[in-house]
Image (cartoon, rainbow, N blue to C red; front, side, top):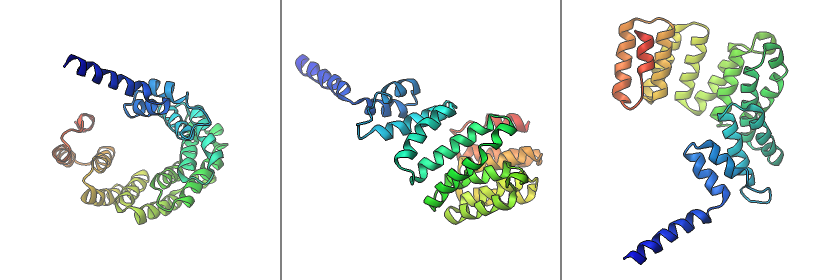
Length: 244
């Protein structure tokens, strides 16, 4: 029996030691152990078949850590390898946009053209890419009219979202009307999204609207109770604090 246990221990150790740096890195990534994941993934050689996938993981980790220049470095490597990959264009454009948000308005203005280019390219390459369309909607809602922003363009992307996913479309309409303070119209669409989806996100977006627009406390509390019944494992304390 003792020999069998020793043999099993040996097999387990051998299995761990036999894992490649890429496999170890992915395992750490899935456990959100970013430092350990980076340490392994950076060891993947350019000749490896997993090199570009490792670059994508490293870019995603850098983006998670808000190290935008580092994320852009890895996403740029991916784009040079596969310029027609919708997701790579989306990630590069998204990282560029998030970097721009941390700059002054004057500095950020120099990035707008490139952000639009990569996000639009992602949307064109993949007619069902929700992330690219959400990013473009957010971008055009934030941009001043002098730089091409406005609700008309944002609504066009909301229409595209609805054609792909009805729930996303209603959430998009709700966001746009909330942004321009047409709160009753925003509520109509967010309620439709909730009726279709009953997801955590749908509850969160409707609660955010109710709190921002100072809806009746009874309405907020009723929705909070519904949210808690539907998703009891979710932490709704932040919304409870805001509503009190």
